[in-house]
Length: 231
Image (cartoon, rainbow, N blue to C red; front, side, top):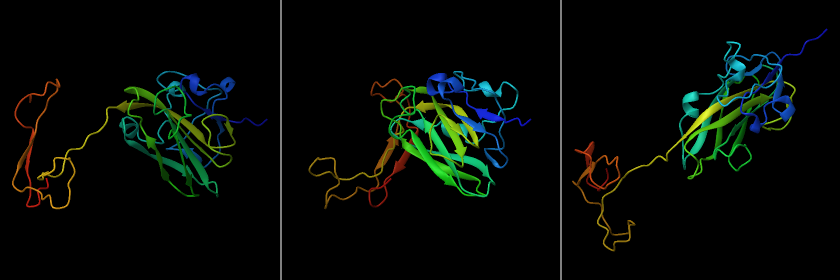
């Protein structure tokens, strides 16, 4: 009698998690998994917190950084580091999916990424598209898989490897300020030839948490432009 151990996911079932929903299922083999190890389930364990397969006390969702997944921002591209073990003797494929627009699937542009993990490799970085500027703020979901056979897909069976599911967080867009004070002679907002930077100008940054156009208090940061007007 041969018993085959399998690994399955735990996202809400609209993403495909149960076997009946064509959820991802991996036959567990030695030397191929995400993070530090993999545990077995007989079927997917869907839930809004994506923690159903941890109910046995073994949390094997450790192939990527939760801090990175909680640091998604509107308008910014997403790069997620993934750690893994591959001692199968050949290359493996690491596949990732993030529901960047929180519409309940992984089918939109930029929501999938993949990279090859060579035999003996310990990790890859998956580069996704940018989070849409109008993406809902708050929780969304991600799925990561590793396998040696077949093409990347968020669903369906794989002959080896592991699947890990995560809750992720989308935050507001990140802004940058800077970095030049110059004499805009034609008032077009562009640094044109001949428009020099202005040195020794104090630049102050204020908080305005209620968006009324009035500083909430003293400047929280101050810099002075250099000889070329940069700060």
